[in-house]
Image 1 (cartoon, helix red, strand yellow):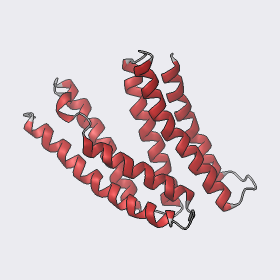
Image 2 (cartoon, rainbow, N blue to C red; image 1 turned 60 degrees about the vertical axis):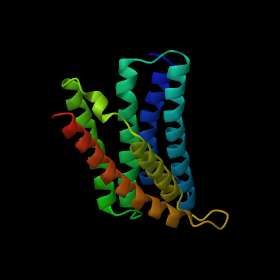
Image 3 (cartoon, rainbow, N blue to C red; image 1 turned 90 degrees about the vertical axis):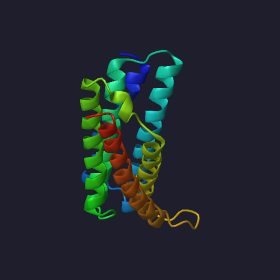
Image 4 (spheres, helix red, strand yellow; image 1 turned 30 degrees about the horizontal axis):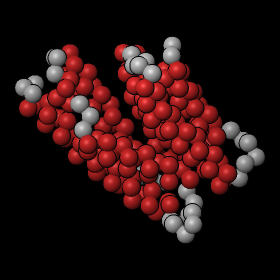
Length: 183
């Protein structure tokens, strides 16, 4: 156990709190629940950056950390997408596309690793762009209220559609890269 892995575990521990915010009677008003949930999601997203930065900076990278970090990320995103579907803030198909792609690409990477060809399906710029669009969309849709005259829910909805499109395109590119690697 080291600091970066501990931070990753905190990200995992945020998930039941995040879900509970929507389902446990707290006496909070709807906009307070939304703001608190958005804050928890933002904390989880920032901890993802922080644990990676610390692992590299402190020389504390590990095989377990490399495994746990993306699992934690996918769990946080899946929990948020499921809640957004339940709240009717995104269509179900967007959540299914994003979660399905994460499962498919993770399985593809594992399979390619067993063949000694994982480098052919390494993270690329389009995957990173998808992640930025997806995380921003989720944050804005969780907050779900205009801010300083900006329609955050509308912007979040547009980014969710963009994230879904980038999700499909990036998955197709990963599949094409795997096929080109001779599998």
